[in-house]
Image (cartoon, rainbow, N blue to C red; front, side):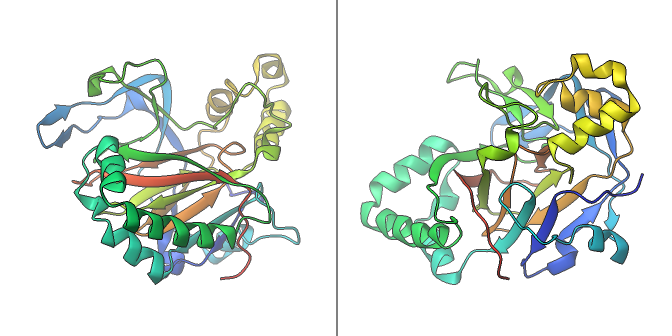
Amino acid sequence: MLLKKGISIINSLRQQQDAVSINSGICYADQVIIPEVSFSKVKFTPQFQEGAVLAKTDWRPLTPMEWNVLQPGQKVTDYNTVFLGDLPDSLIQKFKGLLLLESEKVEDIYYTFRKNESLAKELNDTLNTFLNSMANNKPFKFRCFGVSFPNLLSVSGEFRRLPKNHAPTDVQYIGFHNDCTEEMSIYTAHRFGNRISINFGREAREFLLVNLSLIQAYNMVKAKSPKSISKTDLVTLPKIFFDLFPDYPILRVKLEPYQYYIAPTDNCFHDGRTLGNTAFDMTMIFFGAFCKLST
Protein backbone atom coordinates (compact mmCIF):
# COMPACT_ATOMS: atom_id res chain seq x y z
CA MET A 1 0.00 0.00 0.00
CA LEU A 2 1.30 3.45 -0.88
CA LEU A 3 2.09 6.11 1.70
CA LYS A 4 -0.62 8.78 1.84
CA LYS A 5 -0.21 12.49 2.40
CA GLY A 6 -0.85 13.12 6.07
CA ILE A 7 1.38 13.90 9.03
CA SER A 8 4.63 15.30 7.68
CA ILE A 9 8.23 15.15 8.91
CA ILE A 10 10.70 18.00 9.36
CA ASN A 11 14.04 16.28 9.85
CA SER A 12 17.08 18.14 11.18
CA LEU A 13 18.90 15.08 12.54
CA ARG A 14 22.56 14.86 11.60
CA GLN A 15 21.86 11.46 9.95
CA GLN A 16 19.25 13.12 7.73
CA GLN A 17 17.40 10.54 5.60
CA ASP A 18 19.42 7.65 7.01
CA ALA A 19 17.53 8.06 10.30
CA VAL A 20 14.16 7.14 8.77
CA SER A 21 13.05 3.90 7.14
CA ILE A 22 9.76 2.35 6.04
CA ASN A 23 8.21 -1.13 5.90
CA SER A 24 5.23 -2.93 4.40
CA GLY A 25 2.86 -2.79 7.35
CA ILE A 26 2.01 -4.60 10.56
CA CYS A 27 1.87 -8.04 12.08
CA TYR A 28 0.30 -9.25 15.32
CA ALA A 29 2.23 -10.11 18.46
CA ASP A 30 0.85 -13.64 18.53
CA GLN A 31 2.28 -14.25 15.03
CA VAL A 32 5.92 -13.59 15.94
CA ILE A 33 8.52 -14.99 18.30
CA ILE A 34 8.88 -12.51 21.15
CA PRO A 35 12.56 -12.03 22.07
CA GLU A 36 13.64 -12.54 25.66
CA VAL A 37 14.74 -9.59 27.74
CA SER A 38 17.87 -10.24 29.81
CA PHE A 39 19.27 -7.34 31.79
CA SER A 40 21.26 -7.43 35.01
CA LYS A 41 19.45 -9.98 37.18
CA VAL A 42 16.17 -9.70 35.25
CA LYS A 43 15.18 -12.21 32.59
CA PHE A 44 11.69 -12.53 31.10
CA THR A 45 9.68 -12.83 27.91
CA PRO A 46 7.36 -9.81 27.46
CA GLN A 47 3.64 -10.49 27.44
CA PHE A 48 1.32 -8.72 24.99
CA GLN A 49 -2.35 -7.86 25.12
CA GLU A 50 -4.60 -9.87 22.86
CA GLY A 51 -4.58 -8.37 19.36
CA ALA A 52 -1.49 -6.23 20.00
CA VAL A 53 -0.09 -4.81 16.76
CA LEU A 54 3.64 -4.70 15.93
CA ALA A 55 5.63 -3.50 12.93
CA LYS A 56 6.96 -5.91 10.32
CA THR A 57 10.74 -6.04 10.13
CA ASP A 58 11.20 -5.58 6.37
CA TRP A 59 12.66 -2.09 6.74
CA ARG A 60 14.11 -0.24 3.74
CA PRO A 61 15.11 3.34 2.84
CA LEU A 62 12.38 5.65 1.62
CA THR A 63 12.18 6.47 -2.06
CA PRO A 64 12.34 10.09 -3.28
CA MET A 65 8.60 9.89 -3.96
CA GLU A 66 7.90 8.77 -0.38
CA TRP A 67 10.05 11.56 1.00
CA ASN A 68 8.07 13.98 -1.12
CA VAL A 69 4.83 12.70 0.45
CA LEU A 70 6.28 13.44 3.90
CA GLN A 71 7.22 17.03 3.07
CA PRO A 72 5.16 19.57 5.03
CA GLY A 73 2.42 21.55 3.35
CA GLN A 74 1.78 25.27 3.65
CA LYS A 75 0.58 25.10 7.26
CA VAL A 76 2.98 23.46 9.72
CA THR A 77 1.37 22.91 13.12
CA ASP A 78 1.93 20.94 16.31
CA TYR A 79 -0.75 18.40 15.27
CA ASN A 80 0.22 17.66 11.67
CA THR A 81 4.02 17.47 11.81
CA VAL A 82 6.76 15.37 13.40
CA PHE A 83 9.98 17.26 14.17
CA LEU A 84 13.31 15.45 14.53
CA GLY A 85 16.49 17.01 15.88
CA ASP A 86 19.70 16.95 17.90
CA LEU A 87 20.02 18.64 21.27
CA PRO A 88 22.39 21.64 21.34
CA ASP A 89 25.89 20.88 22.64
CA SER A 90 25.36 23.07 25.71
CA LEU A 91 22.43 20.90 26.77
CA ILE A 92 24.22 17.63 25.99
CA GLN A 93 27.09 18.63 28.28
CA LYS A 94 24.64 19.37 31.10
CA PHE A 95 23.07 15.91 30.71
CA LYS A 96 26.49 14.27 30.73
CA GLY A 97 27.60 16.29 33.75
CA LEU A 98 24.82 14.80 35.88
CA LEU A 99 25.99 11.22 35.16
CA LEU A 100 22.41 10.12 34.54
CA LEU A 101 23.64 7.14 32.53
CA GLU A 102 24.51 5.41 35.78
CA SER A 103 20.78 5.12 36.54
CA GLU A 104 19.07 1.75 36.25
CA LYS A 105 15.56 2.77 37.30
CA VAL A 106 13.43 5.90 37.51
CA GLU A 107 14.17 6.30 41.23
CA ASP A 108 17.91 6.53 40.45
CA ILE A 109 17.29 9.45 38.10
CA TYR A 110 15.38 11.44 40.73
CA TYR A 111 18.04 10.62 43.33
CA THR A 112 20.75 11.95 41.00
CA PHE A 113 18.83 15.21 40.56
CA ARG A 114 18.40 15.63 44.32
CA LYS A 115 22.04 14.75 45.02
CA ASN A 116 23.37 17.27 42.48
CA GLU A 117 21.06 20.21 43.04
CA SER A 118 23.20 22.91 41.45
CA LEU A 119 23.95 20.83 38.34
CA ALA A 120 20.30 19.85 38.10
CA LYS A 121 19.29 23.52 38.18
CA GLU A 122 21.77 24.31 35.40
CA LEU A 123 20.30 21.49 33.29
CA ASN A 124 16.77 22.69 34.04
CA ASP A 125 17.56 26.29 33.05
CA THR A 126 19.29 25.25 29.81
CA LEU A 127 16.49 22.81 29.02
CA ASN A 128 13.81 25.46 29.57
CA THR A 129 15.63 27.83 27.23
CA PHE A 130 15.73 25.10 24.57
CA LEU A 131 12.07 24.17 25.01
CA ASN A 132 10.91 27.80 25.05
CA SER A 133 12.48 28.26 21.63
CA MET A 134 9.97 25.74 20.26
CA ALA A 135 7.00 26.23 22.59
CA ASN A 136 5.05 28.43 20.16
CA ASN A 137 4.36 30.91 23.00
CA LYS A 138 2.29 28.27 24.76
CA PRO A 139 2.80 26.59 28.14
CA PHE A 140 4.51 23.22 28.41
CA LYS A 141 5.01 20.84 31.30
CA PHE A 142 7.28 18.00 32.33
CA ARG A 143 5.49 14.66 31.93
CA CYS A 144 7.91 12.01 33.13
CA PHE A 145 11.19 10.20 32.89
CA GLY A 146 10.64 7.07 30.86
CA VAL A 147 12.79 4.01 31.60
CA SER A 148 12.31 0.86 29.53
CA PHE A 149 14.06 -2.47 29.33
CA PRO A 150 16.36 -3.20 26.39
CA ASN A 151 15.41 -5.60 23.58
CA LEU A 152 11.68 -4.82 23.60
CA LEU A 153 9.54 -5.08 20.46
CA SER A 154 7.28 -2.45 22.05
CA VAL A 155 7.94 -0.10 24.96
CA SER A 156 4.23 0.68 25.32
CA GLY A 157 2.80 -1.21 28.28
CA GLU A 158 -0.26 -1.04 30.49
CA PHE A 159 1.18 0.14 33.83
CA ARG A 160 -1.65 2.16 35.34
CA ARG A 161 -3.30 -0.70 37.26
CA LEU A 162 -0.08 -2.35 38.42
CA PRO A 163 1.37 -1.99 41.93
CA LYS A 164 4.57 0.03 42.29
CA ASN A 165 6.77 -3.03 42.84
CA HIS A 166 5.24 -5.16 40.09
CA ALA A 167 7.24 -7.86 38.32
CA PRO A 168 8.24 -7.38 34.65
CA THR A 169 6.04 -10.36 33.74
CA ASP A 170 2.99 -8.49 35.12
CA VAL A 171 3.19 -5.91 32.33
CA GLN A 172 1.09 -6.43 29.22
CA TYR A 173 2.51 -4.53 26.26
CA ILE A 174 0.02 -2.94 23.89
CA GLY A 175 1.95 -2.29 20.66
CA PHE A 176 0.66 0.39 18.31
CA HIS A 177 -1.78 2.80 19.89
CA ASN A 178 -2.78 6.45 20.11
CA ASP A 179 -2.55 8.31 23.41
CA CYS A 180 -5.95 9.47 24.61
CA THR A 181 -7.88 10.73 27.60
CA GLU A 182 -11.58 10.88 28.42
CA GLU A 183 -11.71 14.51 27.28
CA MET A 184 -10.78 13.62 23.68
CA SER A 185 -12.63 12.27 20.70
CA ILE A 186 -11.43 11.25 17.25
CA TYR A 187 -12.40 14.70 16.01
CA THR A 188 -10.78 16.67 18.84
CA ALA A 189 -7.55 14.74 19.51
CA HIS A 190 -5.58 17.18 17.36
CA ARG A 191 -6.36 20.00 19.78
CA PHE A 192 -4.37 18.52 22.66
CA GLY A 193 -0.86 19.45 21.55
CA ASN A 194 2.11 17.16 21.19
CA ARG A 195 5.09 15.81 23.09
CA ILE A 196 8.85 16.02 22.94
CA SER A 197 10.74 12.87 23.85
CA ILE A 198 14.49 13.20 24.45
CA ASN A 199 16.73 10.15 24.32
CA PHE A 200 19.37 10.46 27.04
CA GLY A 201 20.19 6.76 27.23
CA ARG A 202 23.36 4.98 26.13
CA GLU A 203 21.95 3.56 22.88
CA ALA A 204 19.75 4.47 19.96
CA ARG A 205 16.00 3.94 20.31
CA GLU A 206 13.29 3.63 17.68
CA PHE A 207 10.14 5.70 17.32
CA LEU A 208 7.55 4.07 15.06
CA LEU A 209 4.53 5.85 13.62
CA VAL A 210 1.77 5.85 11.05
CA ASN A 211 1.72 9.20 9.24
CA LEU A 212 -2.07 9.53 9.35
CA SER A 213 -4.11 11.69 11.67
CA LEU A 214 -6.91 9.96 13.58
CA ILE A 215 -9.48 11.66 11.40
CA GLN A 216 -7.74 10.34 8.27
CA ALA A 217 -7.64 6.83 9.72
CA TYR A 218 -11.30 7.06 10.71
CA ASN A 219 -12.30 8.23 7.24
CA MET A 220 -10.39 5.33 5.65
CA VAL A 221 -12.23 2.89 7.92
CA LYS A 222 -15.56 4.55 7.09
CA ALA A 223 -14.93 4.30 3.34
CA LYS A 224 -13.86 0.65 3.40
CA SER A 225 -16.20 -0.74 6.07
CA PRO A 226 -19.18 1.51 6.88
CA LYS A 227 -20.53 -1.13 9.27
CA SER A 228 -17.45 -0.73 11.47
CA ILE A 229 -18.16 2.91 12.26
CA SER A 230 -20.69 2.16 14.99
CA LYS A 231 -17.95 0.27 16.88
CA THR A 232 -15.20 2.83 16.29
CA ASP A 233 -13.98 5.23 18.97
CA LEU A 234 -10.61 6.42 20.26
CA VAL A 235 -9.91 3.08 21.95
CA THR A 236 -11.06 0.73 19.19
CA LEU A 237 -9.83 2.76 16.19
CA PRO A 238 -6.27 1.31 16.08
CA LYS A 239 -7.41 -2.33 16.02
CA ILE A 240 -10.16 -1.69 13.47
CA PHE A 241 -7.82 0.33 11.23
CA PHE A 242 -5.02 -2.25 11.26
CA ASP A 243 -7.44 -5.12 10.69
CA LEU A 244 -8.65 -3.35 7.55
CA PHE A 245 -5.29 -1.93 6.42
CA PRO A 246 -2.53 -4.29 7.64
CA ASP A 247 -0.31 -3.28 4.73
CA TYR A 248 -0.28 0.46 5.41
CA PRO A 249 3.44 1.38 5.77
CA ILE A 250 5.02 2.07 9.15
CA LEU A 251 7.75 4.68 9.51
CA ARG A 252 10.73 4.00 11.77
CA VAL A 253 12.84 6.84 13.19
CA LYS A 254 16.16 5.83 14.78
CA LEU A 255 17.15 8.34 17.45
CA GLU A 256 20.72 8.31 18.71
CA PRO A 257 21.55 9.48 22.27
CA TYR A 258 20.75 13.17 22.82
CA GLN A 259 18.37 13.34 19.90
CA TYR A 260 14.66 13.99 20.15
CA TYR A 261 11.36 13.67 18.37
CA ILE A 262 8.36 15.97 18.65
CA ALA A 263 5.15 14.22 17.64
CA PRO A 264 1.36 14.57 18.02
CA THR A 265 1.02 11.23 19.83
CA ASP A 266 -2.64 11.93 20.66
CA ASN A 267 -3.33 12.25 16.95
CA CYS A 268 -1.53 9.28 15.37
CA PHE A 269 -0.79 5.58 15.86
CA HIS A 270 2.71 5.06 17.23
CA ASP A 271 5.00 2.88 19.30
CA GLY A 272 8.64 2.63 20.39
CA ARG A 273 11.24 -0.17 20.33
CA THR A 274 14.53 -1.02 22.01
CA LEU A 275 15.11 -4.20 20.00
CA GLY A 276 18.76 -5.25 20.03
CA ASN A 277 19.75 -2.89 22.84
CA THR A 278 21.59 -4.04 25.96
CA ALA A 279 21.26 -0.97 28.23
CA PHE A 280 18.26 0.70 29.85
CA ASP A 281 16.32 3.01 27.55
CA MET A 282 15.92 6.44 29.16
CA THR A 283 13.84 9.37 27.93
CA MET A 284 12.65 12.72 29.21
CA ILE A 285 9.16 13.70 28.08
CA PHE A 286 7.40 17.07 28.02
CA PHE A 287 3.87 17.92 26.87
CA GLY A 288 3.14 21.17 25.03
CA ALA A 289 2.44 22.54 21.56
CA PHE A 290 5.98 22.49 20.21
CA CYS A 291 6.71 23.62 16.67
CA LYS A 292 10.23 23.85 15.21
CA LEU A 293 10.24 25.42 11.76
CA SER A 294 13.95 25.98 11.24
CA THR A 295 16.52 23.23 10.65
